[in-house]
Length: 457
Image (cartoon, rainbow, N blue to C red; front, side):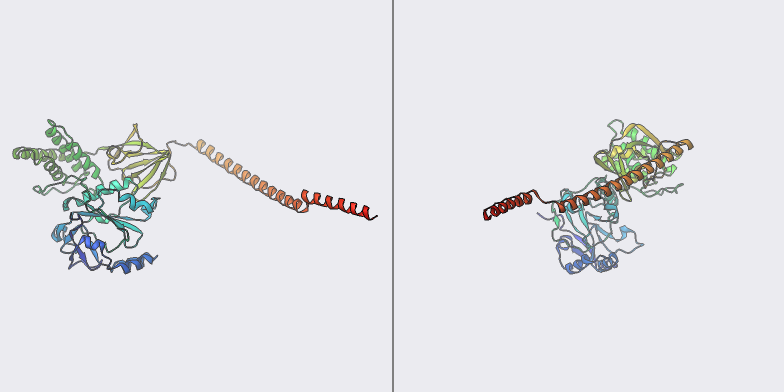
């Protein structure tokens, strides 16, 4: 059976080259040892600048595509020949992944996933990279990566963000024990979209941060897609109006209209008749138009998640403990941190890919939807409002604790000193003592001497 990796991708002579790519077979590239000596040299170097300088001279492929070129300023679709049907993942042993305690087992564990087609060492030998098959849909490439990133972050693994770009490079590398799964299962977590007529939207009143409210977009799409038969039309109208209000408020992009239409066609395009499709698309557009007339500034509901400890795990996640269990929580979902817990977006907890941490449904709090997330653990945060008297008592207690701690340390030092002196005395006494055996032996000699002396006389 033909390998899933037996396809063609583009290859550039080095990292700097942006034109004149060659087409190479991906499987042959992955098994080649042509530049092994140069990679071995890279792996002996401790200086990152030196490693990067040599790496930049290695040939590099674009695992996700066949391209005409990689020139900047040219729209992707103008230089894209074909999507390869693969997305790469890159896991560096950087500051964001230092919390992985079983790094040496990481490769073996990830290779248990049915979606991994290839997995091996990076050129530096300090990280790993792999290939996962996805539907060859350029318009959804970033969405597939975002879904993978979320899943891996739930395991405490932070992926490098470069592969979300279809044109991202992968320099030559090799692994003496590479992992291959020639029949890997395609990763299909994202909703497939279809091209629809494009309209020119009016300018945004408020700029929307790219991806900042992506969860809100996904939530609306999920609500519409889960509508039961008999209520689908009403739900499309209801949530299209909501989307329009959020667009007017600056929380969603104007492309949301086409996103909802694409999602509808993806789910029911092969089921609904043409006249029904036209009616539903018209309903979505009318709902969006109505919503645009009334901007919405919603509150964000967050649930309280208690913890026994918290760690600033990486740039993108906190690590918390609840007893013996630990969890990785994206920082983009955390809105307030206290000494013994924090407030996390209800949406994240309800839609978590893996088991979420324990939370208190009756202990919730509302935040403005544009509230800035918390990105580091504060030094001190408490629910108790301290007045001057309380603070004075705390200061006094801290002073007393320091004083008692000092006295305890002094007492321990004196005990150790006395024990040391006692040990010295015991050693001296031991040196002066005659063992019981020696005394008995001398007594026997003395008896014999006396006996012999008496015989002589």
